[in-house]
Image (cartoon, rainbow, N blue to C red; front, side, top):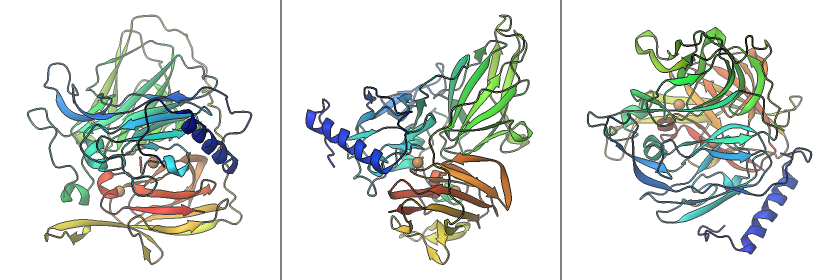
Length: 471
Ligand code: C2O
Ligand code: CU
Ligand code: CU
């Protein structure tokens, strides 16, 4: 694997990339030939650098951040389903880094996990990512080295894979949610990943932003169907969004189209790293303002995330169709549950199991157990034979919520606490609440060493992660 790549790729490496993806396509029936679009490679290069960002708005001091191409959130990386993509990442910060393309079912060598799938990108060095996204939908990207420090200071961005035929929404909106803890001087509270934050729920900031700044009211017109792509790029904050006065339908989860459904009790819950695509019908009155509210942490912590400000224009459509727009399905293979490979994984640790650091301070210990075997760094906790269906039971023995993420796959969520999910749906990150037992399944058709971890970054970095091998 070449680490240093010249910016203009010589013919030889282009050919090599071509051959790699052909080989990968032969093993992985990701993109059906009918769906594959012959198109020129899409290129978005990324360069994380120290920068200054107006997160708190124009009238406040700028904040020192780390940011892809200098912007918080990072540039929206747009790909096209079935069309090759390439990104040369040049490390402009003074720490090792990588880019992980969260939720994309890509070849293992492109997954961006340092020491597991690639060497870290050292300061000043570069790495070339190249893959073809098999699924259309809403994804995101972030570093996988020093994640709390780098993502916590701004390194995260949305990744949108476009459908070959654009679905018929009036508007396609993207809201990347991030939260921040500020000092009175408008700079971040230092010390990311402290033992206390790691032992509890992680760093939960007091300012929540949309696309990198404190949101201004968003202008909408009555009588429209909006697609709202919600990305939770927070280190640790969960959200539960309400859209009073609106008709809201969930149409995709973690990038994968689902059977459309109304959010249970009107609340759209999104854990760190999860995405939700909504169809939002603007059935409000022209000229009025409607709040979007987040009440995940209870009544006293409820706040207005943003305001939907209706223009005075008459409704574009007097009455919107009752049926939602159905997104085209992605080519994810269906698990064969007749004879799966089963594993029972227990999530352990937290506040009650503080260990000791080298200098004798208390440190949190999180872990994942497969039967009696405990996770051990980057060593695979088990291996699944290529092509088999894996059925994993996730059981939470801690008193915290954990969004559990598997790299390289979209898995089906089968049941929670013995209750079948009303509609089978795909996820790459599933919430496992205290005492929950969640069954997930997937066809192990993507070989390699894949990380499986909690996406509360402070939990991940303190042991709540393991590796699952497919071979
Ligand atoms: Cu966004 Cu290892 O994950
Ligand atoms: Cu991931
Ligand atoms: Cu966790």
